Amino acid sequence: MNIPVDGPDVNVFEAVGGRPFFDALSARFYAAVETDPVLRPLYPDDLTDSITNTAGFLAQYWGGGTAQYSDQRGHPRLRARHGHVPIGLAQRDAWLGHMLDAVGAADLAPELEARFVDYFTMATTHLVNASE
Image (cartoon, rainbow, N blue to C red; front, side, top):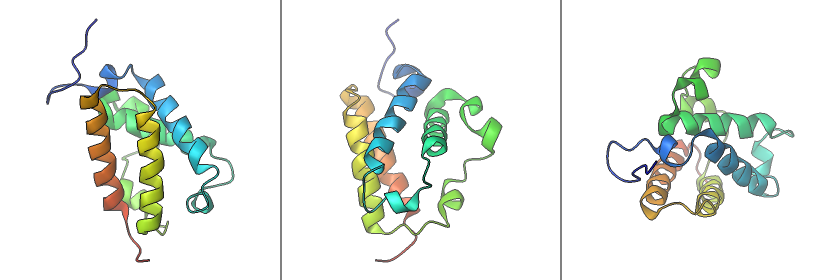
């Protein structure tokens, strides 16, 4: 089946192959977080739940339905869930850099990659809650 990758009606979840894409994306991202001196202190010792929750949130956001995240965890409330974490520009830049590397490693069609880049750039900027 040839799934279109661009346009307002594209279900990105389907276009990237479903939940396995988001599980792999999250795993690549957290492999980088594991050794990042700026980000690692912000996360729990065990990243298992972080990996699962991030993959589920992204799968739901990109069209996978509420079974991916909200059915178990409630409304995403992205900013509220991260409000206890001091996120300045250094944290935002480190997080965004690792996520964009993880997206780049997925070898997506340029139209899809651009959508991910735009979303992550917007979302990380929105989460900044601390000055340097």
